[in-house]
Image (cartoon, rainbow, N blue to C red):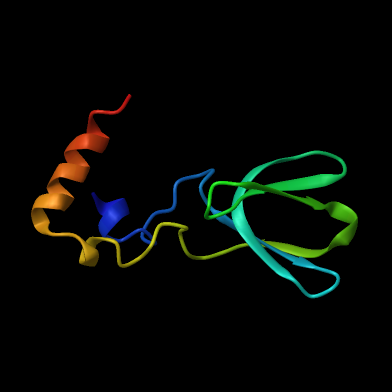
Length: 92
């Protein structure tokens, strides 16, 4: 529940947002989905994987904020929030 109400309080390992600045000035964000010798793969907000060539990267860093929307709980009724937490707690 805390991750829904205050997503920036504790960001679980592996779910940190990675920020990639390219040599041409683009800023790309996503959750790290792995990398190899030539590419960094990011999971974008829409669920698609973006592959960035390492030779085009100027800098990478981890964002201090979660990819989870910070105002999600404000957009839900208390009943909806309770139902969501109950549903998520049943997933294995």
